[in-house]
Length: 535
Ligand code: XMP
Image 1: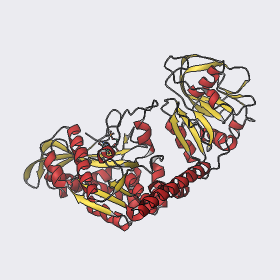
Image 2: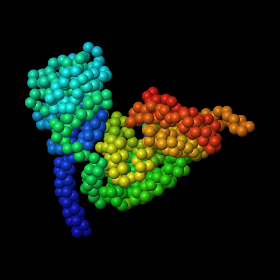
Image 3: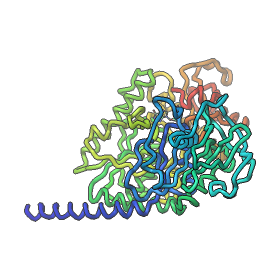
Image 4: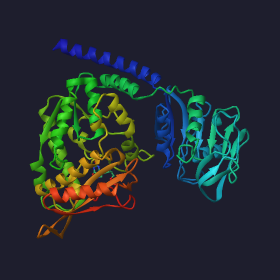
C-alpha cells in the first residue's frame, strides 16, 4: 500500500516534469502563425492557404491571442462583418502584439491597424465587391516579391482607408482604391484592403507566402509525417497508461483518429462500432473487417433491433435524429461500462467542427456532433487528436498511416444513416430496399470511375408510389431519387452533372433488380437553397 502510494506520487512527479519538458519542446518545435479571427467568412481560407504552404497555423478568436507562446512567428488579422467605427466592432489592444511579431492585416484587419494608428477609414462610395487590379505596385516591397503589376485581386469591403497615419507607406493601389496596401515604415507590419486568401486573388498565395516565409521566417516543414510524429508523442504523454474508448462510425475522421491513437497507445484503446441498422448494405461487416485488418481493438455491436423498435412510426426528421443520437449514446455507454477503468473518450472531431462550434466570443452556437453530450454523460476526459486538422489533411494523415484508400476516400455519410434518406416512417423492409438501390448506385459510380469526382452520393426512398408496367402487368410501386453532389466543404453544393448513359444504366439496374421500385428520378437541386440530404 505504502509502496503503491509512493510509487503513484513518484509517477506523478515524473509525469509533471515530463509534461513541462514536452510542452516546452513541443512549442519550440511547432512554430506557428496565429490568425486572429474578427468574424470574416474567409478566415478559414487564410488558415487553408497557410497550411497548404506546409506551415502550421491556428485560428483563434480576435481576443484570445496566446500570450507567452514562443512558437508564434507572426500574426494575421482577419476581415470582419463590422466597420472599425461601429460601437460593437471587435477591438484588440494592438500594442500587445505590435513590435513583437510581424503582422499582416487583411481588409478589416488593415483598416483596424490604420484607424487605431490615427488614419481615416470611411464608407466607400459604393460597396466594393469583386475583381480589381493592382495597377500601382511596389514590387521591391517584400510582400510583393514576384508579384506582377496589374495582378487581379478580390475586393469585398464597404469601408475604405482614405488616409494612412504618419509613417505608413502606400505600396499598392487599384483604379478605385488609392490605399490598397500599406506597410508601416521600419516595422514589419502590413495591411491589404483586398483578400489574398481568396481564390480570385490570382497571386494571393504568393503574397501570403512572402509574409509567412520571407517575413516571419517559417520553415515549411509541417506535413502529415511530422504531424503524426508530434501527435503520437503528445498522445503518449497525455494518456500514459490510461485506457481510452472511441466510437467508430465507419467514416474517415473517427477511423483516422483510431489508427493514430492505436499507434500511440495500442491495446489501451478500445473502439466501439455500433450498428444502428441504418448503415449501407454490408457496411457493418465490411468496415469491421477493415478495422480488424488495421490491428484495431474493436467491438462491433449490432443494436439494430433496439433502433428499429424506437423508430417505429416516427416520421419527423428531427425526432429521428434525436432518437438515433440518444440510442447511440445509450448503447455506447453500456458497452464502455463493460470495460474497466476507462479514463478517456476519444473523438474524431476536426478543425471545421471546432471553428463552427465556437463563435468568436467563445460561446457555443451550434453543437456539431451527433454524440454531443457523451463525454458529460460518461464523465470521461475528452481526447481529440485531429481537432486542428482540415478534412483533406485528415485524409493525408490517414494515407501516411498506411490506411487503405477505400477507407480514406469514402464519401461523407450522415450519422443517422439511411434513416434521414427514408422519407416518412422507417421499417427494416424499407431499409433493405434502400440499401439495395444505394448499393447499385454507389457501385456504379465506382465502376464508371465517377466515385472520386463527386463529394457525396446516395439514394433517397420517397414516400410515394406510382403506376408502372412490367411485362404485361401493371405495377404500383415505390419511387427513389438519386442524389449526387459536388462540393468542397458541404456548406454549398452543386448537383453532379453525371453522364446520361450512366444514369440510364443505374436506373435500369435499380428497376430490374430492386423489388418494389419502379421509378428512378435524379435530384438536380443545388445547395442552397436545397440541402444535400432530403431530411
Ligand atoms: P445538408 O443536408 O445539411 O448536409 O446539406 C451537409 C452534410 O452534413 C451531413 N449531415 C449529417 N451528418 N449527422 C451527421 O453526422 C447528421 O444529422 C447530418 N445531417 C446531414 C450530410 O450528409 C452532408 O455531408
